[in-house]
Length: 182
Image (tube, rainbow, N blue to C red; front, top):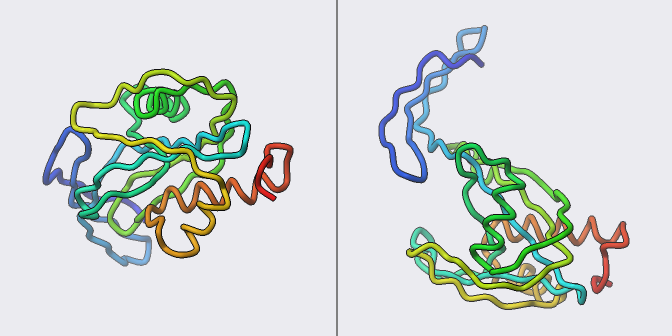
């Protein structure tokens, strides 16, 4: 496919919406409105006991409070890992000495150009949260068995949390990082 035109329809501080037209060599055409997003860093903080730190906040599009892995937008000029380190500190107050990339994915590629990258954050040090003025974030540590049950029962409805946790569980069972999973 070759992009033949892109027109900006809306610009916000977080994303832009464009109307894009593409065509393949056989002449097949696609036209879509696309939410353009710089990408997000997702952090999976895991302590020495194998517990996972989740955040709970109200998500206006979902119209409910959700438990989820902390995450945030990649700012201009940042690498995804640098954004992960910054967002972990801002949202949870924690810093991590060990970072491992778990997964990258597009949460809804039919209309959203956002790519999310999940990092396992280990060897944590606690500090003070620095949330943005429009964020009210609650923190809680959960044993992996509880998160496994919540995912199986549909209590965790956030895609990045499901993908991050299940990828970590699979990854950790194959390495020494798997403390507390069995």
